[in-house]
Image (cartoon, rainbow, N blue to C red; front, side, top):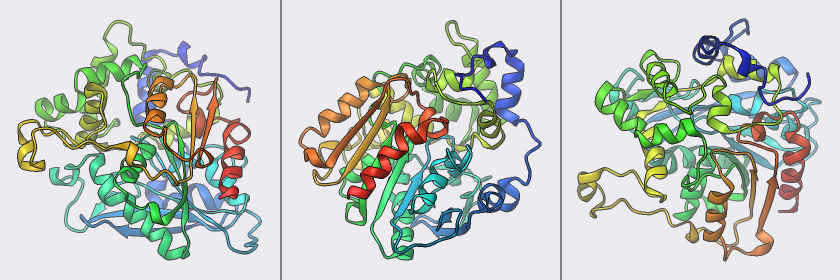
Length: 399
C-alpha cells in the first residue's frame, strides 16, 4: 500500500474514529489477551518465541517475550541480547505491528540479535500482582518513578541472567524517559552495552501536540483522579473516553485523526499497520503516571513525582528531587534518533537534553536526525528499517 500520513482518515466522521480508537476494528485472531503475544503475532510468521515472567520488588508480575533467533532458525554463535521497551499507553506489540521485514523486533532477530520485549505494569502481558488485582485502586498507585525503580531493573536483570551477557537497550518515548532517569542515578549502567533512544523524552517544554498540551494544562491526571476517582487510565474505558471527547470539543483541537493529533504528522504509516494498531492498542496505564507526565510538561523539569504539600513527608524536602541527566556516565554508548515532525519529542527539547549530555564522550554519542519522521514513524513507519534501524544496528555492532 502506498505511503501516506493518514490523510484519508481525516475524511472519516469523528464517530468512526472514536469507535476505532476505543474499540478496535475486530476480526484479528487469536488475540494476545487469549494466547499471549508470542502465539498471536510472532509464531504465525515462523519465528521461535518464548514467554517469560519476572516479578518486581514491589510485587508486579511482568510478562516478557523473547525471539531468540531469526526466521531461518539458525543460531550462528553468540547473539547479543537487545531489550525493547515501549512507550506510554502501548505495550510490546509496538515492535510487531508491521511485516517481519519492517518491524524492529523481527528485523533485529533476522540480523543476528537475541530479542527481548518488555511490557510495563498494567499492560495486557503484565497485569498481575502477587497480592493485588487491577480492580484494586492500590494496584494503580504508581508513576514512572516506579518503572525506573522496579520494572526497568527487573526486566534488565532477567535478560542479563538468562543470557549471561550485557545487553543493548532500545526505548521509544516513555521507554527513553525511564532509561534516562535510571542512568542519571547510576542504575543498570554496568549491565548494558549501549542504549538506543528513539524519540527521546526528557523535557516536554516545547511539546507541540495541541491535544497533549491541553490535557497537560488541564492536568489530566489530577482532574481524573480527584473528580472522577479514577486510579486506572484506560483509553478504552468509558470515563477516559468521555474525558477525551471533552478535550476534543475545545477550539483548535482536531480529533478527526487522533494519532496525528497526539504524535505529529507521521510520514510513513500504512493502512494495514493502522488497523493492527487500532486492534491491539492503546493499553491502560495509571492515572498517577499521566499526572507525572503532565507535571513534566507543566513544571519544565525532570523530577520525581510532585506530591505537593506531602513532599516533605515523602522526600524530606519541599520540592521533588530532580533527575540530573548530566550525571549519566559519559562513557555509556548512546544512540539518539529523533524526527523533525515529532510533536511530542520536539527538536528543541532534544537540544535541551543534549545540553545535559554536552560532556558525553564524543565517540560514545551518536545522533540521528530524520527530518520527515514524527513520533509513530520510528516504530510503525514502513521505511523505518532503512531510515533508522540499519543505522542503529551498525551502532550496536561497533560496541
